[in-house]
Amino acid sequence: MLRKERLFTPGPVPLPPQVIKALGQQIIHHRTPEFTQIFLSVREKLQKMLKTDKDVLIFSSSGTGAMEASAINFFKKNDTVLVINAGKFGQRWKEIAEKYELKVIDYEIEWGKTYDKDMLIEIVGKFPEIKGIFVQHSETSTTTLHDINFLAKISKKLDDCLLVVDGITSVGVYEVYPDEIGIDVLVTGSQKALMLPPGLSVLWFSEKAKERLKSSNIPKYYFDVQKEAKKQKDGQTAYTPPINLIIGLNESLNLILDEGLPELAKRHEIMAKATREAMKALGLTLLSESPSNSATGVYTPEGINADEFRKILLNIGFRVAGGQDHLKGKIFRVAHMGYFDFMDMIQVIAGIEMALDKIGYNIELGTGVKKAQEIFIKNL
Ligand SMILES: Cc1ncc(COP(=O)(O)O)c(C=O)c1O
Image 1 (cartoon, helix red, strand yellow):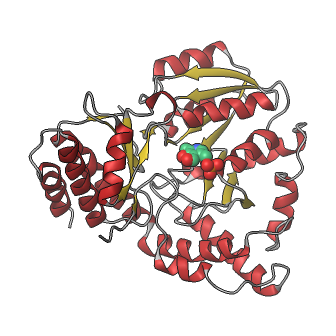
Image 2 (tube, rainbow, N blue to C red; image 1 turned 90 degrees about the horizontal axis):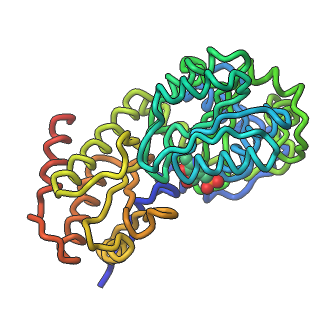
């Protein structure tokens, strides 16, 4: 029997047809005026998406590469940095920072929760020497949103602190305007809401962060922001770029800008809300107390292994993600980011209901779908 596999993982996500078409073109050479023109246009569109006139660099790497670039270009060895560590990717900030000999204040938070504002004020009061705050805007492992506006305020109160934001699953889901928010370094990656295959990362930095480039004493070769900034200003990269991915990015940015950031953010908000409400209507518990609109994490009911449940769901036609580390076997995660619309969510919710029924969890079929339909009808 024909079974389609529908991708609902929080990265990679499905590719729009326009992007697939662009990716499939014959390659062009990168040291040509033709490539330079495309590259400059992509950079301009990235600036539009982020509502900024500052530098936006593109690296050939997955998102982690841009995270590493943030740590090694804007800091000095022994700088004290605060890591908001509330999941797998918060932990990654800590590991990167420690690898490059930054002194990490590890603000560890239970998975599924966000930081406590009073606690944050207390930490910052105790360590005025903090030179950077590292955070995920959207912590994908726990599908949690952290309030970066408040962090920006706190960061500004410190003497000389940069707010470094991993926007890997928030850029293209929310309106993330780093100048307005008060972010200093923002990174994202291609295989999330930018609707591309993996392989590109993006790094934006503020004027204040730019000043730090001169004094950074951490060794770097490939991820050298100053070197890249110089080249990319003129529409070239220091090393061979993934040419077709950049051509694909040109298309996905067209889609994003054509939809408009406010509309795009609203679409994600409604899809995420409908999914959350559907899951609750089915009697399931959400993982996050501060849920992100990029993906929804859900506990499987008591006694049901989430990975077994995911196998059934895959057999029905939906690939969703599982839990990482200690959440393995306990949760599943459904993506909303990128090329999804309301009816995609209705489909996956219906699939989840069928898988729950199949695994023996007693529900009335259609309960979650109905809830989502009601929410979507209100927003048509
Ligand atoms: C919030 C967040 N940060 C970092 C990463 C790591 O990105 P990559 O796997 O592209 O290196 C991911 C990937 O899922 C992510 O969701």
